[in-house]
Image (cartoon, rainbow over all chains, first blue to last red; front, side, top):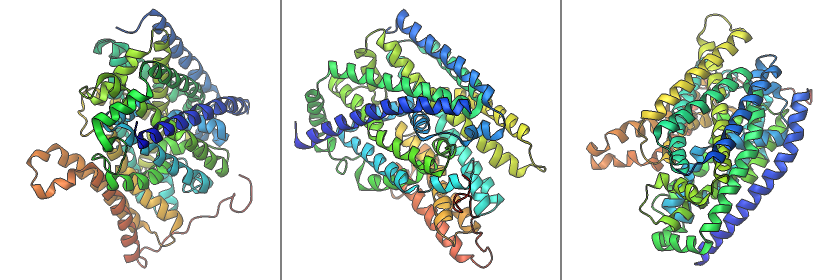
Length: 40
Length: 500
């Protein structure tokens, strides 16, 4: 594996981590927002 | 055939749930603002979920997967590029905060406030045409994806796609933005699960080392360096950065989610949070494409290589869950686009040319009828139109048709006091000229003389559209300052510190 390949693999891992991590947070907070929206 | 009874049960359960909650949300629509922007009361986390659901569809997975298959890791740069663009918008509120303060529902509405009604009409027509053409290719991509992953012939797929479209059109037409937001939230959760399933099973079948080796063997340095990759290079990297900042803030289906936020600050945050996830939602499908290269070699049809991989590695049961996630991604995109383009057609094309003012009831009725017509159009268009260039480039070009002119009008209209209606007309016309020329010349490129071939280079066309739009705005405005004095923007409540 070349140096640039390794860097892109690390970029992929970080991007996936940020995506699934943020998606989990948004899922929890979004449920609260949705309840507020429909209540009002 | 990969798709078994358990998969059908999961898929039908998801579609049934979509119908139930989508149509149930209809009761929340009380007036026109409720129908088009959910009463402008969406908070940042929910806004982010719906924005991401809008921007991810099977079509995005397909073109990003295709890029991964044909360019290796060098296309990952587009993910970083997108993050930079969104963070610029999210940190500065560039364009989106100002539009939210002005309380517009559609982007051409701004043209009437800042320029005049005729600019709004031209902007509305271009936005509608570019947007619907852009959307025309989506269903074709859905069909290709489902064929490869489910393993069925065209007859079954046509039925699945017609049912999917009917569900989306029915809940969008009945509940407007309320139905879109409620279903988007569910679809966001499901598409995240679908992406996780696809990535996990890909990694259990193909190792990172095998993928890196395949990229290196097939592309050499072009597989890891976007500057030397013949599909990208400097021109592409520059115009895609400009285009990303401009088009991301002016993509009506996505921007609507920001305009529906509870205030300008929340609208800005929606882009900031969505930006944090952007690298992932670009790079993950690109990675699936690179994994398909490692698994099958370079001789497959690039468009169908990635779905073929997923159809192979994801086992029954999980396959139903993944397909439901993928359909969820597409349905949330369709609903946002249907609502966006029907509202543009109603408010920016029909309303300006009608003799008397349209009532709220008539506006909503017209919007609903146009949503149904667009649904029928994309079904027909999706089945017979042949796409020029790759899917990604087709989408970039039809997007540039309205985004370049819109960027010229909105960015200059908001931040340059001398912008006037002549400049706006010039920006819209010139911004659409380059992509239209490309689409026409691409049909006859075999008979073009050598000296004109650069005109059918998709990168040149995209770049030119933004440059021409900006030049048109500056030259048109400066030459006609006396005959067409600029109209100043009104001061808004938020700027005065009043109620939001």
